[in-house]
Length: 139
Image (cartoon, rainbow, N blue to C red; front, side, top):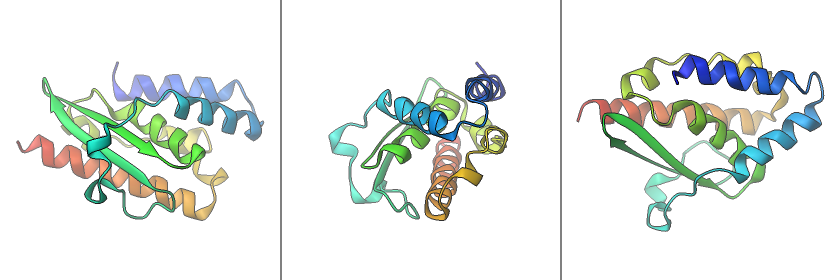
């Protein structure tokens, strides 16, 4: 699936909840529970995402020309946010990750329903994923 197709799938999932943000948060938490966990040896200081209030570790690697992300967080909402981003950006070509506009975030209303610190964390997460993709695209 392309990034746009995955984004559309997520938009449709969140539309089911209408304006029920409690339901949307529960869905986000459920997504976090399905997050493929990062290997313990990757939970290092250099893999912590700067700018997140919670602790979020992210690892990225290139396999068969596609970037694979794994992550872990100590906060349930943040874990759901990172799971959402991994769902969209993992298994994609690095250049597609770098150029992704990620419009689905605004379309599902996520940023406006996050606390300022969580919204900053989301921006930091996306920035780190794109930086990793850029670095891996040059290998």
